[in-house]
Length: 80
Image (cartoon, rainbow, N blue to C red; front, side):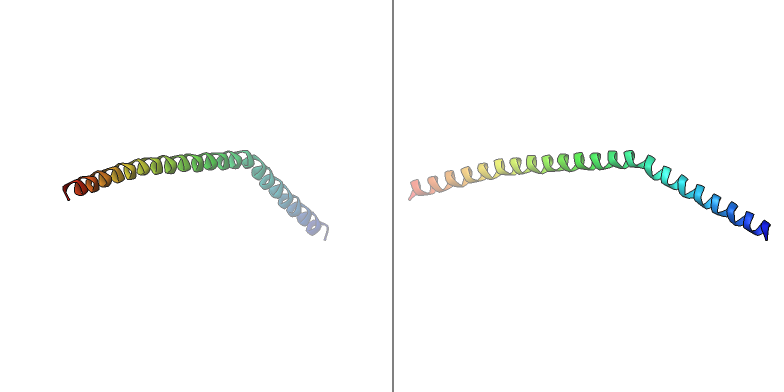
């Protein structure tokens, strides 16, 4: 019976050590995870800037189109 208890203790100690190793691994990953989160935030900021820039570009196109339409309408009114 003493041998069975020793095996159980050994198994429990091994399980405990495995748990500690997993915890240590998780704690070591945390800075990496934080870095990934920061990079994701920066990527979102970059994406937002790209969208804003494209909206500005689209706005300029719209302004050009409106100016062309106004010019066309003025030329039509002058003909009548």
